[in-house]
Image (cartoon, rainbow, N blue to C red):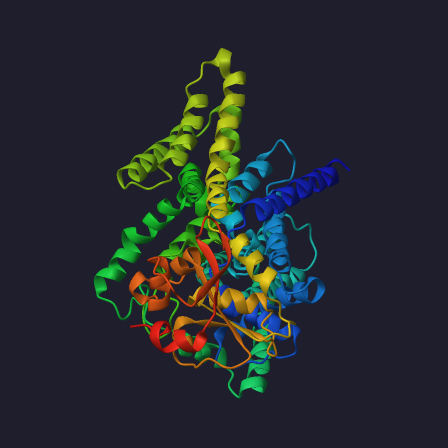
Length: 556
């Protein structure tokens, strides 16, 4: 009963935190792969228009299906899209708590805190993106092995293998990056073969996986005529970018597999959690490869996962490691790091164990972040300061020092999330969404065309629920330049500095009409309809489209 109340209480607290983050720190969307990829495909599924083709996002069913279900129940809107992500994040936190034993005074709560208040876990807790689902799936795969090794009390191993194979399949549905964990499981497989342990499990797991993936690729074949069309769609959608390591000078690749990814972890704030988890490898000393304890299992799982993330290729044609410019690709490491680190952090708070191993890296990372002028140097330093305060406290003051240090440590954990929420409130996402919904609706009768930057266009199509018969269309500037004004249609400009920044559009790429308005030129065929965020978001009606079009609208 006490354990049940603990889980219910934790679930309620996590729900409040997730909802609070959504309502008071919602950043919105990136405007490209999230909106025109997953959200568009989910809406197509709800509207009966979904089909497989050349869009590789259409094959990521693990993200599309739950989003479509939520859309069908609650409508195509931001909160409906956020519900699956919040449930996934909450489930991940609860599984971390469960894997660490569950009692309130144990390591479980530290595992939850290390995962949950990692800034990026909460940031993506309301996004329609597959990365948090990959994190949950990766954790689920390791939990299958953990339960098999340490919690099974007799009985067959095939239920664990069945769970493992189903989780692997669904994670692959979500995003192909689940393959980054396969080398880790291959190492466990080799260790078990060498020791002649758990062979029945691996036999069942391999058999189930072959069966399920054969059926899956058979469905792909039935819909597209090719078993491997998902991979062809990825190739068709690929483009040259800063992570095209096979096409860039080799110096870019060498940077990525040496210090580049480590600096990404430091800059993003993920390194302290990863570092604490990886530190457990050294605390275990010679017991690591024996896998004779749960700590050894989780530490080795994390260590091998980080190694694979660093070096494994994601292409079968060339050596191309995972893109090292966006931390979301590596969010699947956060739950493993939290589980690996939590017991040692708990031991530190109880008996000051592992003090040097925890403190020395934190102070080094603080100094490095400060030297590189990273904005998170203060928060990492606060971690180090909180731990140092307790480590250096005399015995007679240890009780009070522990309470003070723990409070400071939790504040330091939460501070980056607070900063992120404050920043989100300055970006005007809510204001531009409400402005559009006040003036336009997908079922209105008056034809209207709203012209803006590419991200704002994508937002607008989403707010109109991607309705194919909508009388309200959103164009970007380039599309407008290829069209001519039509009769009985109202034309608008929607100027938004925030979404223009997301579109990576420079001043020179703005149409002359927009530049002229910002320069306060008079007698322009524009009428201000509404202004938000002190003029950063403007809705303007083009009062004379025919006069404006040839003279002002085309980009120079």
